[in-house]
Length: 126
Image 1: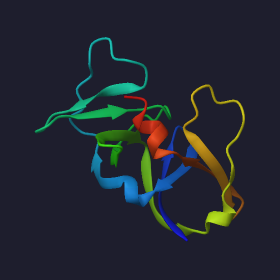
Image 2: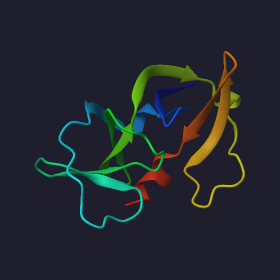
Image 3: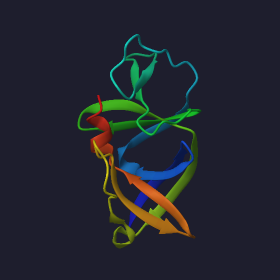
Image 4: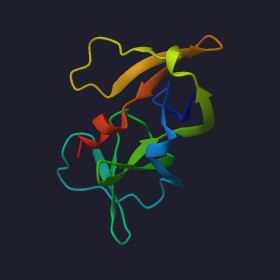
């Protein structure tokens, strides 16, 4: 069993392993960058500042603060829906058709399709 943090972005349901998550915070205070690289929404001031990405096209009310491969960054999401324990055997292969894959698999619970995001692939967006 793996514990996942579940969230919504752009009308889709997602989850990712909770071990990559450091915190959840509001998206208040994001400063947009002039001419950012694709998927970078902006930064949140702090020491150090936090780069925020939005490859899932969220409108963004919350940020999942992730730490992966020595990178700490924010993932903009619309809503955090909670934690869920998931049997690894329930995760199906990733869908075809991704140019730069960030979805590692899919699962269905209660008739709902949930996309499993790959934290390492998200970190590679920076």
